[in-house]
Amino acid sequence: MEKTLRPILVGKAEDLPQKLGKTVTIGRKEIAVFKLENGKIHAIENRCPHKGGVLAEGIVSGEFVYCPLHDWKISVMDGRVQAPDVGCVQSYPVEIRDGQVFIFLN
Image (cartoon, rainbow, N blue to C red; front, top):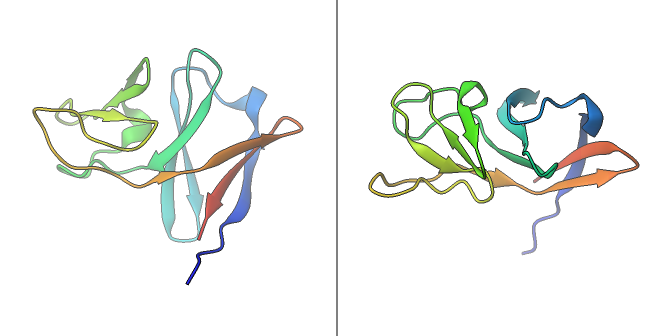
């Protein structure tokens, strides 16, 4: 069976801080939204798989966020934890329409 994704409006792209995370709560999901230095916007689950650190509060460098608790390096592109650590967080498709940011959820 195919999953249907629904777009959820999270705000204006221009209002997102660059190279910083923003926490967005959608229902029971907490999502970290990042606008990178190149202007691209990505969304991942807001909790590090290691000890639950809030990723939106981490340091952003390039296409990675560093967990504020233990410095795990996580890709904001696909949610994969970088070696030597292992794990991943859910990543969410993002689309910009007329300057508005939408995250797609099941």
